[in-house]
Structure formats: structure tokens, C-alpha cells
Amino acid sequence: MSTQAKVWDAATGRVMLTWEPGIGEVVDVAFSPDSKRLALAGAGGWLRVCDAATGEVLVAPPQQGCGILSVAFSPDGKRLATCQPDGMVRVWNAMTGLELKAWEAHAEWVACVAFSPDGRRLATASDDRTARLWDATTGKLLRTLKGHGESVRAVVFSPDGRRLATASDDETVKVWDVADGPEPLF
Image (cartoon, rainbow, N blue to C red; front, side, top):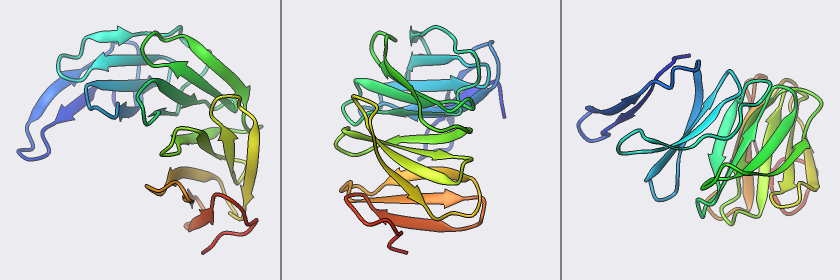
């Protein structure tokens, strides 16, 4: 891990911005849907939303007790979701830093969080070998996806929101129908 976050020009390979928050390791980053803001999450439990062009800190919610492992913007850019090693998931107002909702999503580490394309659901990946689907507003559990033999490290929705892909330490990727079906499609 690094204590810096860099924004690169993908066409030229040139570093456009280097940001060093000075408060610990940067674990994850996410661009807002309009590419104007950049969320940075830290191993020390900090979260920052910065101007993606200047690096100016726009939002700095209170530091959490344990590290933040993953951060994601909602499709409309109004919310952020974070997850932590203590099993917690939090949803934040991305403009003010106000915590909107927090809940224990898993009994073990939550490694990754992702919003559905419509922003109505969240997916989480955990060391408990499951991925879970949640109502992004209420935190209500919608489904638990079981089928991996080791920790689930990543989750991502398809662009139409109908499928979810999960990646695991068991060296497999599974694809699930979000609407129904207890077994992965493949």
C-alpha cells in the first residue's frame, strides 16, 4: 500500500495530481460518476472526498475506529458506501460527510462494497465466504450468496444491474442472477 494517491492521464501516462493525505495508507479510491471528485479510503479508518483536479479536500467525515477497505460512489454521486474489517458497512452523504446509515453486514471482514447501477442495492464481499445484497437506503438484507470455498474479495454489478460477479481467494469467479436463484449462473 501507499501513502499517496495519484491521478494519471490515461492517454499520456502523465501524473496529473499526487495527493498525500499525511494520515496513513491509502487503501482504495473511487471517482464520482462525473469524474469531478475522488474518494480516498485509508487503513487508519479515514475517508476523504477531494476535488479530482486540485486535490482540495471537500469532505472529511469523522475517522472510524478501524480501517476502511473499500469505497464506492452511488451512480448519482450523492452517496458513498464504505466497508471495514469489523464487518461494518456505512453509507455517507458524499457532499457533506454525514453518515446516513451504518450496519453490521458480516461477522467477519468486509473486503469490498459496490452500488448497483440504479443505486438501490449494495453488494458486499466478506471473509465469511459470502457476498450479500442489501437495500442501500435501509440496510435491509435482501440475499446472501453462498458458493465460494474461501474469502470473497470483490463484487461488481453488470451494467444492467441484473447480474453480480464475485471473486474469491478460492481462485474462482462466480456470476449470480441478482433477482433470484440460490446458485450461481456459473
